[in-house]
Length: 111
Image (cartoon, rainbow, N blue to C red; front, side, top):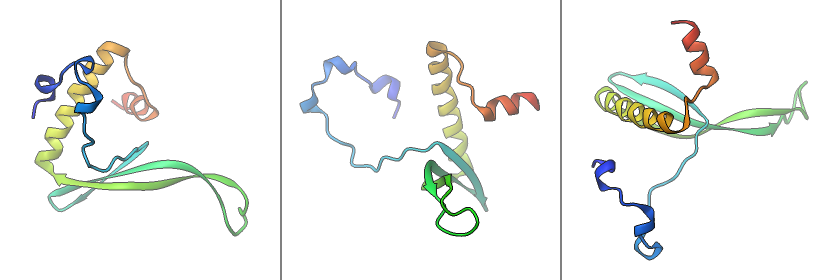
């Protein structure tokens, strides 16, 4: 489904016409990628503060990574997803400016 063709301006849709999708919603601030044979698994995680329970660091506040979901797909689907995400981000950056992260800055240094 091509979202660009199917989207209507929000102002033309009343809230009575909108139903929840019924799909789970996850927030991720970190991602890991694992290959298992011909499939790729994206491990989506979020960071949150925690307190060490025991040992020499007991009582210290740390940032813990908590996996939210694992999204697995074929290499073909991963390629399609990467193209769609890249196109979407290019549109966002054209409107709002380049998005930089520590990862993209480090990657640019090594090219």
